[in-house]
Length: 431
Image (tube, rainbow, N blue to C red):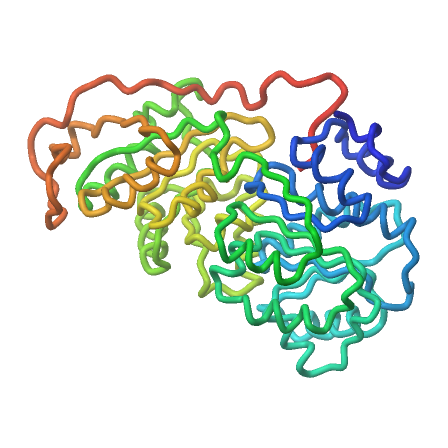
């Protein structure tokens, strides 16, 4: 389906035309018509399916046609992290280029000037607030924010917000909102706590399911069985000119790779180790200021940083389409976190590879991920230079690398030559 087949406003369609977005993604095709009717919606859609446009486009259209107080705040979009709030704000700027509405991003980690801008936007008539729960609640506790004009309340990545402990904050905010509003929830998963939240704050919502937490087929998922002490060497091999993943790149090192680790100290250590090997790597973790994070992400997008070493803070907040490789240094303990991590690659119809390094001690977590995905992940062989790999049924050990010959077997190649598949001539799908 194409956007001009939907009842979107001419101004919104003009912005889409300028951005060369013509064709809807499945979540946009199913969600936008329902939101234009004013119904509450709970949509299960993972990152990278175009869910942000699925609620921004009907919101901007409804604001044009529905009666609302132009001198009051009319909509709130909630996001779990400031990175996602920034991403939403950027897309709002593009999609809303021709409409007369203003938005204000509200999140922590800024300087005093940003605080003043946020307060002014809330108190003096921004139309849309894009906020993290904690920051919005902090402003509400200090200033008399008027929420009487709110007609649209949207929660993006609601499951993540509950995982981060924002339930009470969300309910405190909801109690200040008018009962007569449209409420929209997007979640990558649909656990019981999400269904209970929907039952509490929504009215007869339409439920839309889109590929419930399953990675797209454009991601080649792989894993390597090894000892903990062999992981750093394996990362070096994957990023070296001898890497089997480099086929089709003329032997040039891969650019824009994300390396995920479970703890921020490990992120710092890995980034430092890669830098010592003359690899352009930068760390991304919660100890950085917002300004430092912005600088790292800008350098990463511009190709000045080849490897972004990050905690899960990046898994749901980064919006870069041309990432060919994601490496999981540590196995995520939750299948949903695995899906969000590897979902950073193969975006916008590109191809991509995800490699997970599975130590003996982490096998139980990876087994759960495979059970969740209903498939066995392809195994890559351990290079001989790194020593012997653990046996399939070997119990946990101290993580020492063993000398000897690694497991044999040829690695299946994956080419990165086709950055984009053939698409329809009319244009692209909206992000």
